[in-house]
Length: 337
Ligand code: SAM
Ligand code: SF4
Image 1 (cartoon, rainbow, N blue to C red):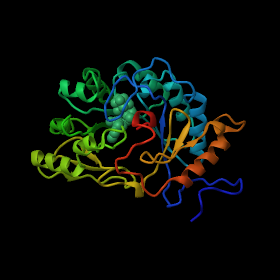
Image 2 (spheres, rainbow, N blue to C red):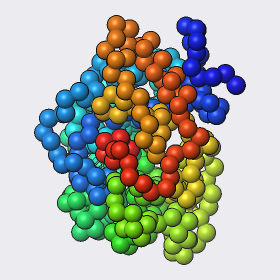
Image 3 (cartoon, rainbow, N blue to C red):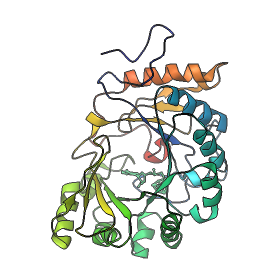
Image 4 (cartoon, helix red, strand yellow):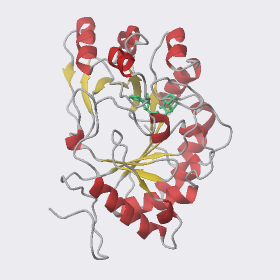
């Protein structure tokens, strides 16, 4: 196989890592700030200004252009809470104008979606993933460190009204916090085309290891609890590079996905590359290694320099992430989920 790092200036049209995986999906964290305080994510608190050195609109544009020249075709904006970033529409508009970029999504807690949806859609946003850990307001408040559920449910209704497709809902299940909610969350897929995804809790908040182990719920347990309530779930065929194993309750309009990065790592089909809000390229969510791209962003030809950074990052992408709980250099909110 061809090594990802090239010696000459000839440029590959695909980004392929040492293990033959084609990297197509960009995850761009546009801010480390958040207005929720989910304990599994470890937000530092809501600062009113972006930290010094945060990605600029131009940085994101150059990065998306470099990635698209290497065949990457999907960009998902995340954070922290990406809708706190006032320049997000500009970033989306630039991505939408980049040849080859076909799918532009945001992952959001939904709180600001009603306020900002027009400018985001006008810019070219295709779809949204909305995080929803509980339906019972007190459980939701506990899971999100004080968050109110009403604007999140409103964001979900609005995303459906706007005809965005698919609308995915993300729930991280934590024993003792929101495991009482999983049947209610699954019911959301019954009458509306909502795609509820249960995500295994990753040790990305530097929680006490014993506390983490007790709180962790494997996807298989979640599925068994759901099958006890709804009967056997039907398999829904999906793209093999998708991290979710997808099922549906018989007769439902939406689906249920299980994202099991810990109990069933999907590293073998990983197609992702991340850019953090502080200008680092991160080949793997679950491995601390990052490449500081600041000099590439600031160079006289940033797109070419970023192509080199991406090739090097693909070369450094390991076969598997570090799925075992351990102390990480950064927590989820700073990496971008
Ligand atoms: N603020 C936005 C949101 O909550 O959707 C975007 C950023 S958040 C980091 C992206 C996703 O990562 C959310 O769905 C969140 O539930 C998930 N997440 C955060 N910490 C996690 C953890 N420790 N394990 C698994 N998923 C996590
Ligand atoms: Fe904020 Fe999203 Fe992290 Fe919750 S999961 S603290 S909403 S960034």
